[in-house]
Image (cartoon, rainbow, N blue to C red):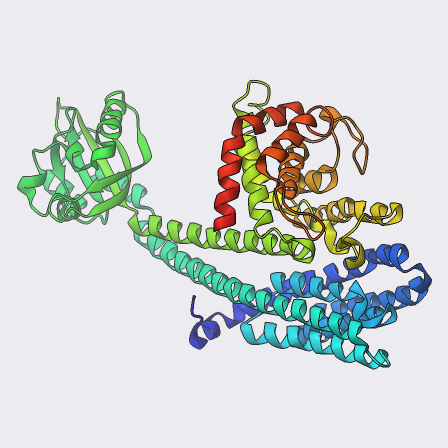
Length: 566
């Protein structure tokens, strides 16, 4: 595990505090919007308490607006940590009061506190102590309030209290680990940015007005070979002069030190021999041909190797024809060592990769919130995204869909397929976990998970301010229960009106559901699932997707077995 030392945190404390303040404003607006939107859930699930719950929500929203105003004031910024801690506890208090009014520990409204923890902790740059203190405090607020409202908790209530405590403490543990990793990644990114700024400053100091200086000095010393050599020896870049065959005619001191160490290894030899073998023929030949055609070559990046130390040098080359010796075509090459630049670029890219990885893990973790409540199949989410990727890659090879299913489409499908049932977080446990058939009323409520998931992802995409794979996630969460013949839900779409991403996920989801055990059924065999899917071609499923499944059925079977064994 990464280690964040106290001096390292202190070094970037100012940057982290500024980031905490900026993200706190975002969290407050998230709370205002979510607390307001979830009044819809109050109206649907507990209409008899709608007025009371609306009062609670209005009180919290007004408090959030007040705290937002305080934080915008310069004096309020100093207390941003304390304010956010109080707002988290107040949110937990409001939700706990609603849960107590709906039956105490039996009520599913405590999930709202889990969503607050998951949402706020994934945005705020908290350290381990802050995340643990905040999460445990919210848990204690919930337990104390509900226990005060329950007269004599029975066996069922205590069983639910134990169940809820397990999910609470698990969520606090998971989000604490995530906060630790996010904080480490943030500190690493800040360090890379600061190092990059220092390096850029040094490079600007060393190379400021370099080309202007070279041109000016060349004009002044054109007639003097001695001064010409003196100019080259005082430039901090490698400078060589070559003839039309690429033979090195002149060099400066820096070029000799970097490429050869000895003049006899450098002068009289072809400059192309110092280019790394994999680029030697293509880059070397191309540059000489361009120079012969009077072209000015600029910003060509290449890899060179020292003949003495075998050290690899990442370089940037510029070149043009020079009139040094009458009647002879000579070309001047200025080669700048950019190895430090490249290393910093790689560090920045690695930091960005770590940030993206953390975001993806957070998204997968949020998706698993829904799965943890009714999933007995182990790696359901992982299997779904692998099945969808297999189907998309096969369909992309067909003539009809090769332009639609691009590599970006496949990447977005792989990321967003795990979100297909995220809306189940809003479905009560007594419906989601019911072992027998659902009533018509229960089924209608169950089907609303498509809209719950769609609205959540739509809000998240709107907040991001730009297009992302969440757009495809909205298609999948909303339409993966539509059927090819139009008999599905929630909109009754049919055939090509159903987004392709949802058609692919629909088959993968049904296959995994059939071949996985549930509390109310045993797992079917691959052959039974295959038979059902083929029978439903043109009814439940897109025939093209079914054909792809048939072509890939052996890979499905192997993938399923491997993931069950892993």
